Length: 135
Ligand code: HEC
Image (cartoon, rainbow, N blue to C red; front, top):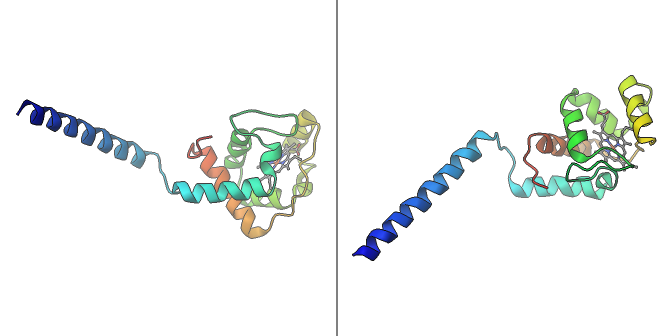
């Protein structure tokens, strides 16, 4: 009997834990599944974006960290970010971009991104900015 009561307590505890998780998940405006995020991340990696934009909040000499560009992208209109991703050269003369180029002593190159993939990369950066990407 004691064993049964113990099992009941454990079960209730586990159940309350899992509902807590569900509630926390609901709060974080989670629109994308893990699989969708992994697919978007593949696009980011396949274009070599992560070669210059590193994870783990680390800047490198090649470019600002992923979290940094995600925050910058979120602060700008979507159309600007899409245009930047597809053809950064168009924007080299804008004052804030000039400051970045000066800081990193590097121009972000044209990576030959298609419109469709630029949309995906934008979506990925928003997921990073919203804290949905763990690493
Ligand atoms: C060769 C290195 C390099 C590669 C590859 C690269 N970037 Fe960049 N990126 C930079 C640098 C450096 C900057 C800072 C601006 C500058 O100096 O041109 C930057 C800036 C950015 C910004 C911020 C723009 C702003 O001013 O708000 C975004 C967004 C971005 N990159 C996205 C991407 C994406 C998406 C890819 C892959 C398609 C990519 N980058 C590939 C080097 C790179």
